[in-house]
Length: 214
Image: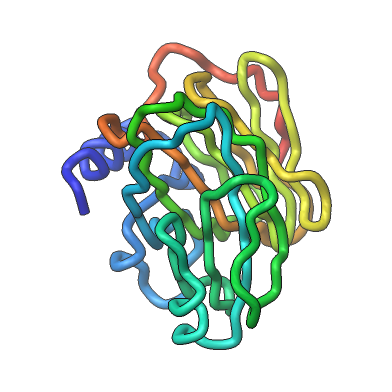
């Protein structure tokens, strides 16, 4: 794991005052099926020529087939009982045959000509769990498989639910996340961040208004 991720995790850990608040840790630190936020992959992607891109999510029956289908902007992970090919590509891009295309999430607004990296996470939160206030150095997006999550920023709140619209947050604003509803939240999360900056930094000045109720 690169030093920037260590710094970001330590900062968020220091900020977390409640046992209910979750930070994202490397998946190697996970014990069994523990709930929380787990970093499952990180991939440098290089530069993009356009000011926006999309996150494509495909599932495949085996790791070998998914690896064969992977392109230069693709990452293969095993998460939430599925084998995923996660790709950052144009809207109309499609993965090779052999899998199931579940979604393309975007547009994700970026700065053309700058280097980006993709950090992927698996989030499993029981209702009422939160994440401490933080910011990202690039857009964040969620693909929710179960449950719901409420995200508060200075602009208000938005809720991501399984089978509903996908949550996208641009780079920069502070945010506070709460798992809402009555069932366990399960989601894949992308932070498409500036490669020269930590994907996540703690926020120490902005405080949420409590718009999201667990």
